[in-house]
Length: 207
Picture: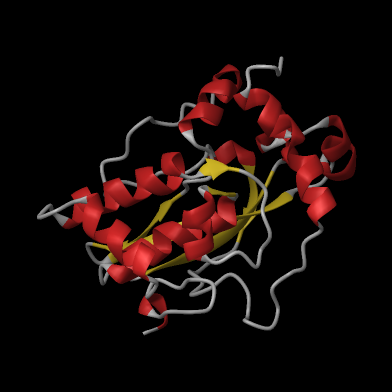
């Protein structure tokens, strides 16, 4: 089944993923596990722009990733637990990321819509969407935008960014974001530039 499969990126057969999966909720319900997995992917992994080639186990080791990596981690934990999970894709308004971009990043990317991956899991007979993109530290910084993103998730209802930030979306759930031979290359200098403002926010130096 594609939504339970291991891949070079979603390497949930890695020992570290198994250990995390076992430690999230011992003896709890499926909903309790899903809630714990979501909050770990959202808040346990800091939002940071990273290479698309970074695997889930590497994301876990680094403790950092952007929407693609954090969603892949949630998917990996679900699959390890035997819960079907995959990715959804949409395009966000530039304003969704604008608070976290440096001036240079805004000049480069601040006009058009931004591609965005988030997670979906098959629960109680239907696909439900969960978006772990921003950790709570960054969500609190964005409180001035009045996004009204809940602090906690109950493990069943959908948990996504506000719909008015979404320009368009694709139907269906992807087993993986990219084919194995089609992962986009990343420029280390560009990533560092995009992370400049994130570092300032976390150090309390951003306006």
